Image 1: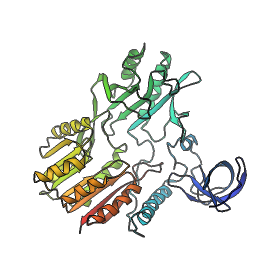
Image 2: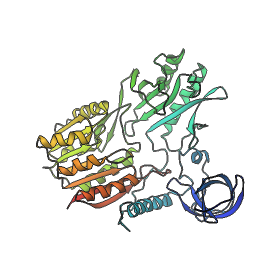
Image 3: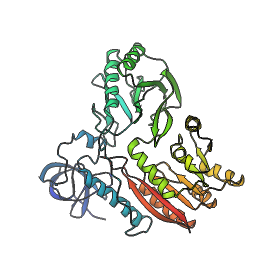
Length: 456
């Protein structure tokens, strides 16, 4: 262990030697590492010590002695402080290089695959204003209802009015709603006193249709005085709003949405299109936040699968059916499963909406349903998986490979858990064939990828 005598507010001149996966610069003083926000490799800085732990510390830049030619100098630093755009200070081509290297290194360190031929990252055309969904916390700041984003690793709200990576109409709705709610003296929920009504404002916008959904996350179903008038004005000012809902969340935890929804105006869903198919999207359903790049992601997944008209497909973690329904006209049958009942209802409705008759969806976990389908004689040729950040359950991998598909296509939003799962698939006699990163989240550290596994 490195012994240190560093104290808070010590200052040092140092060179930034690397970046962490979350975009912090790495500085070493006497071989002791410090992580520093807003610092890029190759920069010479004067660093102030903020915090010292047993094996690493945190610092901040007091002064730049030499800046990187890859630095974006015009960035509002609130985007770094809150994590809205934690790579926003790095020019976009370098962001793509860094993300590619992250995937290569994870496959080496975790899956024991040195120099695996990861394909170049598919970069985005729209690197700003691309998000179709916002989940914005609210707090009372100096007695006033305030919207913004939490400072990293805290629940301290930083007031933000332009979110930089969200569609401008989403920002405009949030700002208009916040200002109107101030006039009727709506109080934000306070985590300490557990008083107040409004917790979050959630806004979705269809990329191709422009249809918008506004969800107020609140502690009770009772609207404070004047809120109904505010919502009337909002839908008049923004005709694209097709749905306004109230979500009741009485919990003291950090979950954004509660389980109960109440429609205040319009429908309980909006519609958008993806790869030519129409999708109904309900408030709790998963839908990729960058539609243009999601279309490239899914098209890559289909290309990796080498689909034929005779194929039987399983779409695990199917959500509202985006992957399975987009490919349904290229195959014989699509079977999907999802744990969120509302999403399965959406998927079933979306099949009817697109006149698709060869797609079947059920509520439940893939680990439970896959063996049941196998017993019924349903043997998939290709399985598509698009799991959450924790990756795949080991029991699912065993259940999936037991059905003996020729190809498994893995869509991952977390290369670290994907790299772990590579070893699990190899243990079940499936070989990693291709890896294609796709940048769904420009200006941030998040990486999405598509990979294919083929049966030995």
